[in-house]
Image (cartoon, rainbow, N blue to C red):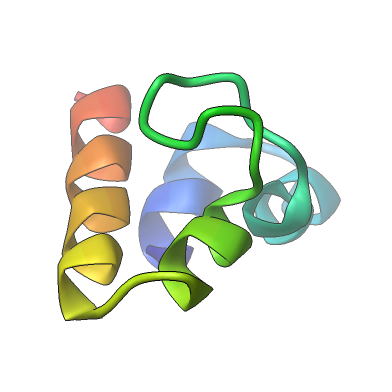
Length: 57
């Protein structure tokens, strides 16, 4: 996830803070990716990874 975020965002601060910012994508429903991952199980980690892989193409 770290590598994907740094490929998506050119600014390191933006890449590093993305996981903590609220996100309106349907997967997160207004929560941060971190909240989403902490409220679930290993599947949630995998879902965030899939989301980032799809986003970066």
